[in-house]
Image (tube, rainbow, N blue to C red):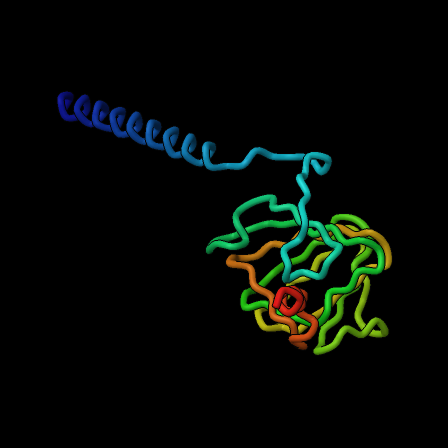
Length: 169
């Protein structure tokens, strides 16, 4: 009986050691994949892609919006900026970081409708929902989604990337 107890104790101690080593290895792997945290003043801004109306800047905080998988981006919009009615093939969530962001649902940007989200405001937009937005002053929003990011304008003439194609013809 004593031998069985000793063997069981050694076996359990060995399993605990292996489990600890595995947990540490997995923790290290996760730590190596984690992007370092940053403060707002460290965000690196660049021009928004051509399918976003001119004048905005974008910062990719996590992931890759052009690839499969989760991403987080920030969009910095100047005063009097408009995002015409559009939709996405996947769900997205939006949080206002600074400023005020006006949002509305429908097939056409209508500044008489919608509501204003103040800093800290949040919206969840399901795939396919037609929506639009605008600013009165400078505004930063944070967008979370699963890539690849895509945007389809309700009125194809509102797609700024189409205008660029026409201009280059």
